[in-house]
Length: 535
Image (tube, rainbow, N blue to C red; front, side, top):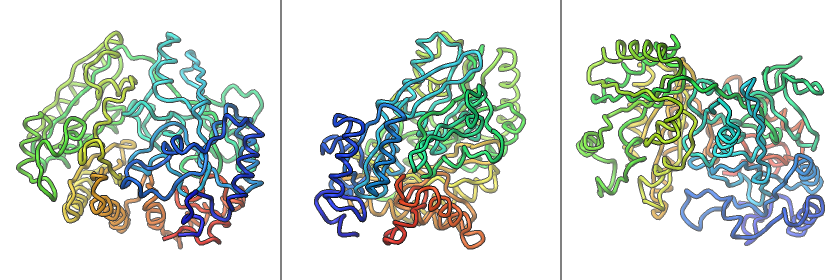
């Protein structure tokens, strides 16, 4: 821990309090004092909510709230001049992956709540969004404009469209596979210059949000999960409203049949019978969205199997449940549903159910799981965080990528369940296919934030799982700062050439390490020289 982190006031590494004050005064002069704040109550929003109360150390020093890309450019230039690191945050909470907290104590948050413009092109089926646009904002813009379009969205509607996308966040409709909905980034580079990826490199090129490449190297992906710039505008592809939407539920009552379901799922996705992102979850993940652990079991250690069986039956969940959907003309949906039944119902203990709906019914479907798969956002699925600890519950998420095969699903499931139980924790596991060939195997590790020992055990357990999975060749799809450097260390091919290459780029374009230092294990030369990452 540095000397700065021991002071009462969070200050960035290598920056004095006087130096920080000078930087904040410069920000205020450039964008207006009303857009710069050190209010402690406001800064509480930029902490990881899933830590033991009062123990957070990665605290911001201030927040700036730009209203234009020109103001973002001014902030970045001044941050370089004063060597004050910035931590951009769209509007989501990033819960389970470190919250909205910066990865370096004393960083200045760049909040985009005031940059929330949405432009929709119905003819070509896309939206152009600023980083403050939430899933609610995008949905409302589509509805208010009377557009015959729907957006692929996440489970919790408060999140940001840009921030979720650049974090490789998972949505559910056909455009979401392989995170394919984005097209064209506008980026403020670490020196304050404005850059556009792909066809945006040409003035007035109308294909910027339509064609993902340009001339020469395609750099869009460099700005995803990186700290090479701040995305200030993004194209996001939308889907025409289908004639029929059919949300589906598949229940697996025999835990041992889950791998067989995975093989069937892969076959059906490769054949495009399922052309979206299903969600296959074990009993406890589904239960965490409906109830709490304390309502079923008050003992210590993992929930016993007989209690899980009871919960699965009484809530009608099964031992695994898959949420998915069909979209399209009614005749096509009927045909594909028949193919699903023919394949899935060959598997013992599997049940399949679903119902077709027209566009007039989507907004008012009673089940939030079914609304989210057709682009209707809500906050109804947020209950998961309270599985352990109720209102003061939390979770840390570990999410490796594995091949979408029965063999890998069985090995991963058995290993992760065993490790969770050895740590004395419940096993909440599930799969969200990235495409027809690979899937994230998400492990939600719950804890009660009022129990410091349990919180510490959960975080250490997650870090251990990263290391064990790494030895099997499974890498993380998304990082929590607590184990970011450990996760990046698993990518060891050719003496960690991936990280070394990332660092070379960082040192070239951001020598002062201004933009989100530490993001994805990329620190930059200045902070590496100062001893980061700190253990």
